Length: 111
Image (cartoon, rainbow, N blue to C red; front, side, top):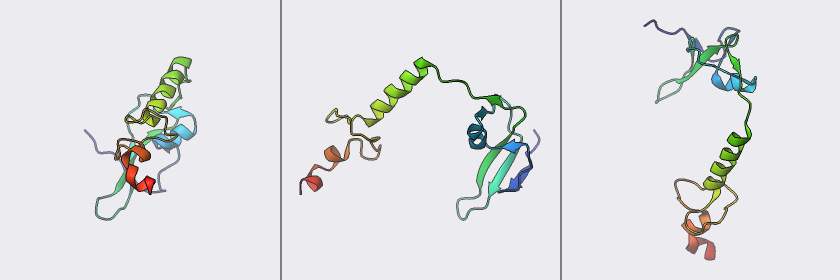
């Protein structure tokens, strides 16, 4: 296995993009292999790494189907529904709390 070329942040050659940059262009990697790495120095935890893909080999993003849209809406509703009071909190329930803020901290809100 050969090592990937490594480029510093903002110094990657034209024609390469990260997954997020491809998404902004309505493209996806489309099964191609990573062709390079982008690294930004970071302190204690090591460098931040982003993988680069060739733009000319990228494929268009698949269109959203009605079934996929419905499944996504159902999943987002489940993330907003409090397991304790079963109400839609209007926001995504934090996993750290495990319930809406009202159920997780009832005494602090009553004061």
